[in-house]
Amino acid sequence: MSQLQDSLVELIRRTSAEIPDDVHRAILASLENERKNSLAANAFKIIDQNIALAKTKSQPICQDTGSILFYVDVPVGYDEITFAETAREAVKLATKKGYLRQNSVDSLTGKNDGTNCGPGAPAFHFHQHRSPEISVKLVLKGGGCENVGAQYSLPDDTIEANRDLDGCRKAILDAVLQAQGKGCGPGVLGVCIGGDRATGYEHSKIQLLRLLDDRNPEPKLDALEQDILKTANELGIGPMGFGGKTTLLGVKICTANRVPASYFVSISYMCWAYRRQGVTLDGEGKIGKWLY
Image (cartoon, rainbow, N blue to C red; front, side):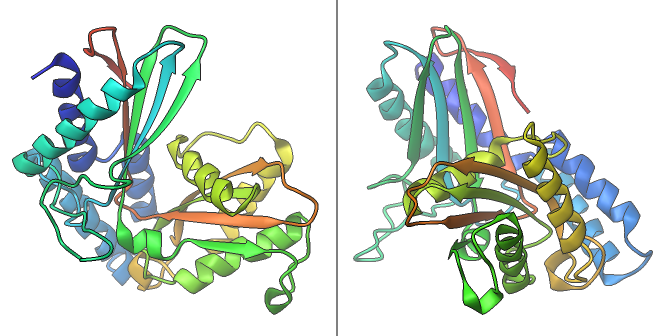
């Protein structure tokens, strides 16, 4: 096994079995905020027990180990083809070891070859930069939360949403309301205002790479993030839809240029099992540091 493959297997193991510190802190803070012995508080207690067991046993936090999304930042000239080939072998080995469930099927036949590899799986997003550093971020995004993602084309008369930030606010909150407890809440929203249908969703998922406790450098988006988080948590949906004060753990919003004819609001929903981790690698593929 190459050093790179070994490092990627460890990245997959840790992403699957361990919640990042910023997410765990948010979950524990939400537990303290819920009414004692309520359904919401008990749901959080079970979630916290699940987190501890998964880490101790080095087993997946959720049976749905989800879509495998690699975000790779590399210097100019880096061999992306070899990286992708090595990552696929790492995914196959991690699946064999039980870090990933056999969770990827052929869309025409429904056949599962047990490798988690096939057309579009895993997914790779490469980005070249003028830095010698190699960083690899991995998201394992479950199907339940993916199902409650949404995309709105504004104006939308059904929710009285115009082409402005207030219209975006209405669209995002409507997505939360429609999701209810079906996305394994409390959730985190990644949102992109603008772009086309494809890039809107792509940029919305990139927002899920941000730390939960960061703040948006754009004041208008920062205000919108905080407003939606506060308002959503006043809806009473709560964890798993059981009611309570915590419907969302975070909201992360970006913008992308659009053509004048289109105004999309793309919303990616991440469940409480927020499996996101990253590493830096040296030239041989050895892990330098963990990013979350």
